[in-house]
Image 1: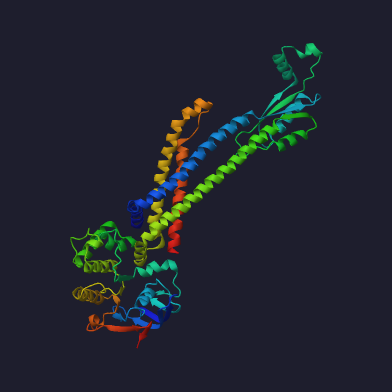
Image 2: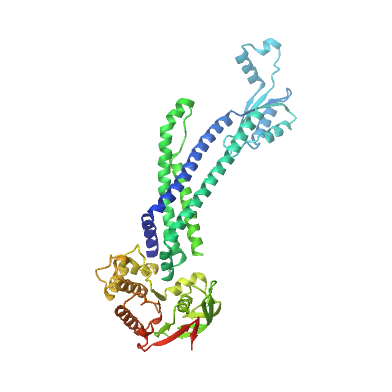
Length: 289
Length: 216
């Protein structure tokens, strides 16, 4: 316990002792977090947009004329169990007749003497898929049923939107990964410079019998403190910029930027602690090897 | 007990020691003398296991250089106090913090640290200078601080590498007397020096090194 308190207090004191190198370390984590945090908000808002668009995805299934209402109900239950389907709205022949009347003002029975409109159903897709929705398997499954006459869908549009979304996710993961790697690299080098200037301290600690973790501890705590400071700074920067710009964005696009402050801070903090730990641990471990 | 058994070590750029045999009993005070480059510091480094023999083995208590695991080395070093010619005090810490460092490593309580360090500072005659930084102390005072830091953890062995190298004759003599006092309390001491005049009349065993070997 006493050792832990000593390591902890040494870590905090080191932040002040190595304040000039701390600045570059904090700044590089800060920049990484700004990039990652901005991308997180862009991603959350893109998710929201994609969910909105997915809400509009519809697949219309028209049944053959001789399919009974009971069979339509059964088929609708089958369709509901297909992967990616969230709900089904059945439009019976009578419903179709009413829709015709509401849209064209005439009763089709008066015009033709019989109701030629087929029973159909509208399939709504799930909107909270983590990756892109592929509707091809759903369509081919629907077409296998002999009772199905025709399947209408916005396949090309959906796949175009989904492909863009998939590409966006990949690019985003790539950018965040590169930002993290660069930050780890900068921190490793910053901490290594600090360690080189603290060679004597490390040697002295080793000679008086300090274990590896006793030597490493303060440097890792120092890395954590850098991370926390960078996380707080980047959170305030991102929120400041969002508060400043969201009214302009709304005026221009009618789009309300969405962000969850607590979630954003949790992500930034976790990321900064991770980057701070990996960076300082790498540097000190190489030195102690 | 310290036992150096047929030890050889060579540096990549030349120098080192060959076929060294040396045994130091508990509480014994031994001088290691020889010119610069004769291998005195190498012997000390082998003893605190900063380097490992290329042949032979070093045994200190239950620690054997041939079988010791890397993670066990700190536990050996807790039994050994090392004193350097250049003091190796930490420039960004004051006298109190420098002497207290070994106690923190051993996990002492804050109150114990304060008590032991103040006692130690008193013993080396530096009371009132607790908050002084190394650059505010004279060479002799820094060397005494270095000794206090080595002694505060109550080591079984003291390895001193040219501790009088930067001291004037009076301070050097006082330091030898202080080490003798410590040795009388049962601590084994191996002190490397090239100042034969200083040690010849002290009545302790003298081991002479030349070109990396013990001169018989």
